[in-house]
Amino acid sequence: MYVSGIIAKFYRIRVPFPSMRIQMIGGLLFGIYGTVLMNYSFPLNETTIVDLRHLAIVTAAVYLGGMASVISGLVISILRIVMFGMSSAAIDAAFVMTIIGLSGVYFAYAPWPRLTKIITMNLLGMTLIFVILMLNTTSMSSLMKVYPLQMTISFVGGIFIYFIAEFINKSNEMLFLLERKATTDHLTNLSNRRQFEKSLELELERARESKQKLSLLVIDIDRFKKVNDTFGHTSGDAVLKQLGQLLIEHARSADIVSRNGGEEFAILLLDCGHHQAMAIAESIRQSVEKYHFALPDGNTIRLTISIGVAVFPDHCDDRDDNDFFEQADRALYEAKNTGRNRICAIPLRSRSLPSDQSPF
Image (cartoon, rainbow, N blue to C red):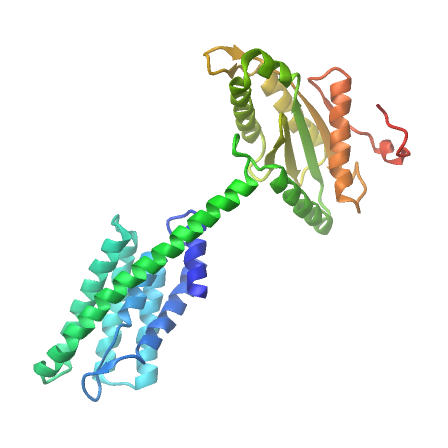
C-alpha cells in the first residue's frame, strides 16, 4: 500500500520522477518486495532457485526512477546472500540482480512507453537469469522444465503490474484534477475563495509561530459592471483573466494570489510588512492603470483598481483570524468611497472603534 502511495505521490507532483529521498525509500521497499518473492520460488537444485524477484526491480525502474532501480537491485542481492548463505550461485544471482538494477537507470529515462520499458527490461532480466541458471546447473533438461514456466509467469506478471500501476496513476490523476478543480478558480486558474480561506488560516498560524508580518491585499476592479454591460460578459471574462495574470507577475513567487469571486481578488504577501506591502500594492495599481486590456473583438480598454491593505498583527486582533480579512476589506471600501483607483489601509487606531461607529 505504501508503494502505491509513493507511485501516487510521483504522479501528483508532476515531475519526471520523485525526489531522491522518495526514490531511496521506494527502492528499499521494492528490494524487500523482491526478497519476499524469493519465498515463492522453484528449486532448480540444492543451491539454485528460480523466482520473479527481478520484477520488483523492473517496477522500481519504470515507475520510480534510476536510483530506485539500483537500490532495489542491491537490496535484493544483499538479502539473497544473508538469507540463503554465501555460495557461488548466490554470488551469481546477486551479480545479475545488480546488473538488472543498473540497467534500470537507462530504462527509467528511455523515451519509450512504460509498457515497452517493462517488456524490454523483463526480457533483458530473463535473458541474464537464463545465462546464470545455465552456469549453475548440470542438467539442461531440469532447467528447461522450469525456465519456460518462469518466463511465462514473468511476462504475465509484468503485464499485470503494468495495468495495476497504470490504474493507480489514472486514479490519482483524476483525484489531482478534482482537487485542483475544487481549489482553483475555473476562469483565471488562481486559487478560489475556498482555497484562499485555507491558505489564510495556515499562513496566519505560521506568522504567529514565527513572529513574522503577513500582509493582505484585497483588490477590486473599479466599475467592472460597466465593462459587462457595455462589452458583454465574454469581454468581462477576458479582463478577469488578464488581470489575474498581471497580479501573478507582480506578486512574489511565494505569495498567494486568488480570485475570491466576481471582480474581487486577493494577494497574501508572506513575511511582508506595511511599507513593502504598500509598495507592492502601488506597483500593481500603476501597472493595471497603464495596461491595455484586450477584448475578444480586437479592441482594448483601460481600467483601474482599488486596493485595501491590512498587515498582521498591526491592523487586526491577533486572536481573531476573521478580523484580518475584515480590516483589509474595510480598507478596500475606504478606497472605493474616497475616489477609487487608490490604496488604503486602516490605521491602527481603528481597532479601538466601537462596533457601531463605522468610519464610513
